[in-house]
Length: 192
Image (cartoon, rainbow, N blue to C red; front, side, top):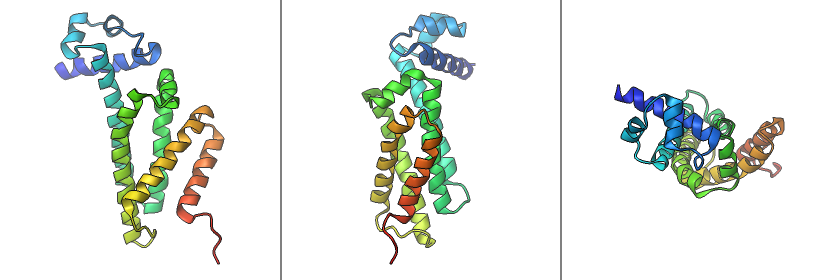
């Protein structure tokens, strides 16, 4: 029963925070929307900030699960990396579409968001390094330093986020992602 109540509070809080924003949401708002009493909400979460952090932490966990699922797929490493890139951008898009206020947090690289992003970054970098190593061992890639290459790939991918957000993840974004992958896999220098 406790898990069900906690899950209900988090699900409702997610919607209320998305609609009203974290600073405009009160514990009363969450209690009313969930049909639970304030005391019940406070039994599980001592403050609004604690509740908000838990909502965001759950979102982060979902992103990490999805990245792990992609990294463990039985497909070639080059396709895996491409899928990780698309999964990365889809995760950002889904977050922003669910919560219009998060859009500004991402665009402004707010401290709140960056704290949670670091958790995702560590996992995503490890996934990329693992895929790069797998690809190098199978002769698909030629990578000398998996960690640095994964870091560079992640930094450049994150650099595309602002433009994707501003373009509302439109058709040009897919073309940009394809070009980014092409440069990553083949470089820009002509073969001699």
